[in-house]
Length: 285
Image 1 (cartoon, one colour):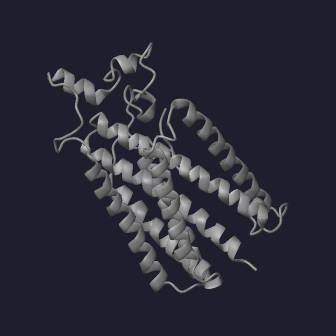
Image 2 (cartoon, one colour):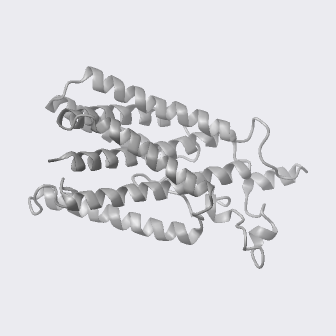
Image 3 (tube, rainbow, N blue to C red):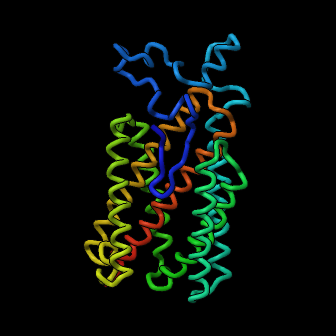
């Protein structure tokens, strides 16, 4: 099973006949009758390559394998590009219908670049950083719009996003959440259902059937939907963390760190946008 993002499907570290993130990772407590626990290198192309070379697979220590430092560096570059794009858009584009149109166009371009990367077999730093730049422009414009009406909302949304991601990482590292195939299937089913419901709601609003945004209104119902969306973002963060952890343990190629950065960035953008809406809802009189 491949890890995915609530907005875009992505390949993660999986390949045609090998390791697919959490699905092939040996789990504690499943040694009996579990071929992966008995042979943790089965069905793992990175480990098989090491075995063929006569060396036992180990946690990566060479520059040819992905490390946590690689993931942190690529993630900092990608998120930094988002931040720079957002700051420039905020500073240079006044709130107007023109800037809103530019934000919408940037979001479309970012989506296209993300989809192209999702269907590529290898990570492309140019595509990933391009996605980050256009996503940053979109976030900068909408953040300025929210700040105009609800002063301080973007800053509170950033703090909220940091709190959610930090708490999710803490819970994951403490072992309170075990990312298994069953956990992923249940979460993915809920996420798909959520996206379908939101798509239907958007159509109802567009055709005037649902008023004031329908399920995405700035009232109590909209707050409930926003909280569910943020919880889904936290769920996808756990998939990202597990995927990164397994990729490092199994010696994924160094350039796969770009995919880790790509996935984390999309998930954090999702959480920030939902947090921005939630802050605005609770800031209303």
